[in-house]
Amino acid sequence: MYRELFTNSTIRYYLIGGGISKLGDVLSAMAFLFLAYELTGSKTLTTGMAIAETVPYLLFGLLGGVVADWVKKKRLLILLDLIRVPLVASIVIFYYANQLGFVHLLIVSFLIQTIGCFFNPTHRAVLPLITNEDNRTVVNSLNDTLQRGVTVVSPFISVWLLTSYGAIHFFTVDALTYMISALCFLKVHVKDSKYAGKRSFTAVWLSIVSFSKWASENITIRNLFLFTFYMVFLNTWVWEVGLLLALSEITTKSEEMYSFIQGLFGAVVIGTNLVIPLVMKRMNLSSYMIGSFIWGGGVLYYGLWYELEHFFIGAVFVAIGIPIAGLARVYLLQTIVPNDQLGRGFSTNAVLLYLANTLSLALFGLLSSFITIQTLMIVSGISMTTVSAGYLVMMNTNLRRRLTVQFFK
Image 1 (cartoon, helix red, strand yellow):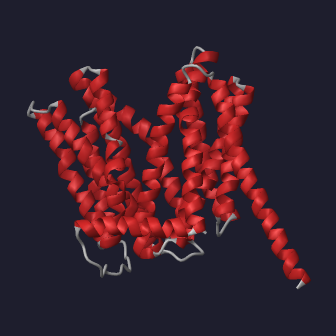
Image 2 (image 1 turned 60 degrees about the horizontal axis):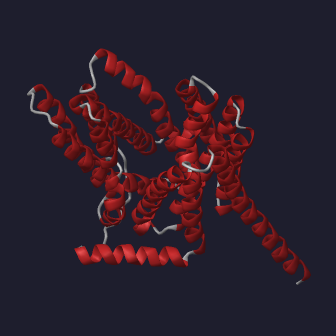
Image 3 (image 1 turned 135 degrees about the horizontal axis):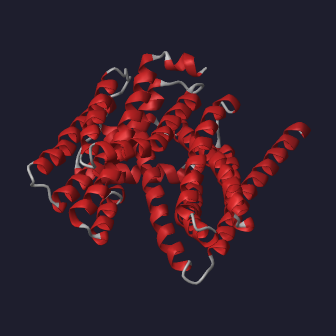
């Protein structure tokens, strides 16, 4: 099944281009932080660099979706990759000319992430145009597997670059990845219709409003967005920060154990992504909630037992649930949202994710000052499993009622 799809040159180059571009994104994100600290020695300024990598998605995320719906998607992907090449190359040039400063680094970082606001929804919106509904789950699985694989491999590449050439040459590799990505997208054949509406600042706002209205009226998409925000909000802090803090309470090797857990998590996610298409050809909101239940069950598990070995077991459940929920979300967006609104669909989803992440880190970080980490994990796990199980029970009850009514008719 996977081999057959990968022989399709359009799908193959689409996946490779996206994976290579993702590698550039991951490496540049690390490189900006490494170089910021190397140049300034300031934790505050390095934190400011990290903020510069997230703010663009909150500012321009929705706009990126509108543009993705307005222009030729293949052309935009190639253009954005090519724009990123001189941007990251300028850092290398300025560095060797002894002219590189923190401000230049900050501006380029902000611009690179802003480009990502336009690139990411466009890349996602292309997939339905090159696949049919039957193989969409498989291609989504391959795409997410490559994206996850890149994040697993990138630390090893970064260590090699740091020890062999220095942090500055992260950007040399970045420029090469964006060039290769652009060449791959040149070979992707996309049947893309031309946008017939008006293009203006007013039209941008009207496009965002019209999609928001459409999404609010579509029950499945509206519920998908609400459940996505809810689940991500409950998970982000307890997984990204709470887990590390919890490990520091129970072992002197918390950073090593955290790295091992993240490695196990990445491996299980990749395996789950490859298995899902063999079990689920088509997905629905119930599929998303099944994944969320397993995901929340993992959080609840390591919150209840709160011992080192149980964190590993809980991470396995989380790593099974997240890709099920993630693939179901992508499939629903690609299947339900009209092709001329797909960019706005994925950009809205991205903005909700970043907003949920930000609020989770802020609120749970505040709550952790006077509530134990274990309690926060248990509350989050119970909240996730209760809502997802409640939805599944309600849908099953409604289905039985409909079948009973039809039987007696």
